[in-house]
Image (cartoon, rainbow, N blue to C red; front, side):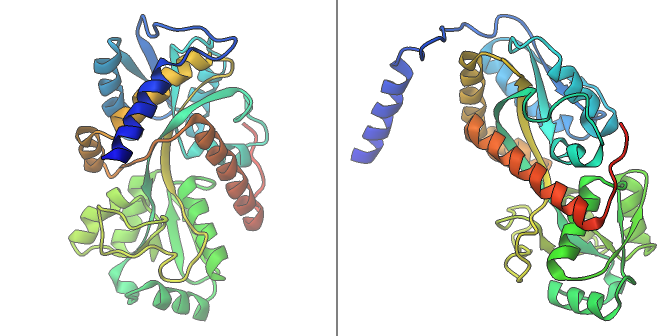
Length: 325
């Protein structure tokens, strides 16, 4: 109880402190906030709409989701980067934000310098999913088979240079195996290819793979995250079975245009973190496989930088050449 009272007092004192030098109080928001999603409806915008609704109720202004699909999220990011830095245009980012700098020769924005970090929202881990006919029951058997048949195990992805493709390249790198990539036009066809046996395996996000695994059409060998997922608690992580530093998946967070006032960033970060701790939103996120995250703006920007560096290294390992945007 003494510790709890101390924490409460610290929060109360913190909220009563004056604004930092050079910053003023804000009554933000006073009008609707646009939340840009760089992808088509039905995917990344689902958790964005869940969070947006909560923020709308809490802050008294609509958080309107604006889908701007194109070039793996680049078009939506460009709109955000060039928007006025007033807190009324935000971008609900995905892991693609950390991949596109390595995939394209030159982006129409700097993925770090042209944005102000607001905070992390959550993530969905990838899983190593194989067709049952492959005849392996765990990662050790999978690696042994792959090493005995260099280049003969093939895998699907939603496209060359996408996060699913690179996640599997990272797996190959960390296991010392040679695996053959077969790109498809989208996640749906890539998953179907595994289900029908056109390819041996892939690394889809966990929530998309679970229904097929429960139906016996896929076998989940491991999850590419730092901890087990409550969505599939019996599935071990890659690290648990000896494959280190192979974490991958889809993550979500919010960025604003460069120069957005810190007073506004503080409001958004505080409210987002508060919502992420509520059981109501966490339960909503769980329906689409998202593990709620949170944290400070600084932590999220440091994470983005580390992700950009990681995927750039994977691209170089794969010998992939950058494409023109």
